[in-house]
Image 1 (cartoon, helix red, strand yellow):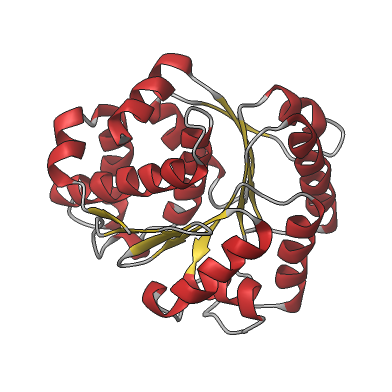
Image 2 (cartoon, rainbow, N blue to C red):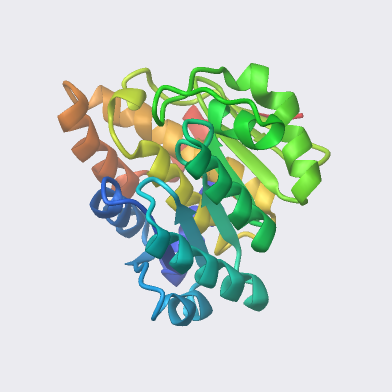
Amino acid sequence: MVWDDLARIRERAPLVHNITNYVAMNVTANALLAVGASPVMAHAVEEVEDFAAMASALVINIGTLSPAWIDGMRHAAREARRRGVPIVLDPVGSGATAYRTAAAEMLIAEAPPTVIRGNASEILSLATGQQGTRGVDSIHDTADATPAAKRLAERHQCVVSMSGPVDVIAGADRIIRVRNGHPIMPRVTALGCIASALTGAYLAVNPSPLDAAAHAMILMGVAGEIAAERSSGPASFQTAFIDTLYGITEPDLAERAKAEWL
């Protein structure tokens, strides 16, 4: 269950190694700390293998790319894969430029991730080669991209987690839909990056990638609903969201969770 996993995160404080973007580093680290995980934000090729070796999960986010960062991602992913450390890949903006799409495809090919977590447009770009986003924003709906997500999961023997008004988590033979969240969430930067980081934290304590990915999205959605009730706009929402992750309770999750295991 979502709460059981969160309780284990709080008890074990798993180390989650993040190679993420400049926009998201601070708030992602704070979100992981709020749920009880231990974040490290390290991308230098000289040390990523060491951190990947000691981590309980690796989260790779291609939001702000450069050749040096891609090199670090490759080394970290290979080491994590070699050691059996679960990997989350967030292909930010895949489909927007050939460079981003190629980087995401290369990372998947060299060290297949445990979970690919992105928006519908990013998932479509990786599954079908279909291009087209508004920068890093999705122009597609998760319902339209669900068949592609399932094919991508089957092709790479992984879980695909898509965020949207209805989140869709696809395994090779199972689909989960999560109907939690709030319309203000797309107005706040780095929430998708936080979702990927929390997916890493859940993978660190749950051996089922499908359940871990779904539980992370339920936590995101429920926390978003509560934070929206306590805030007046995007800036106060971000603060309320981190506070909500820190103080969320078992009844909060049990009473609000809206998930369908299909």
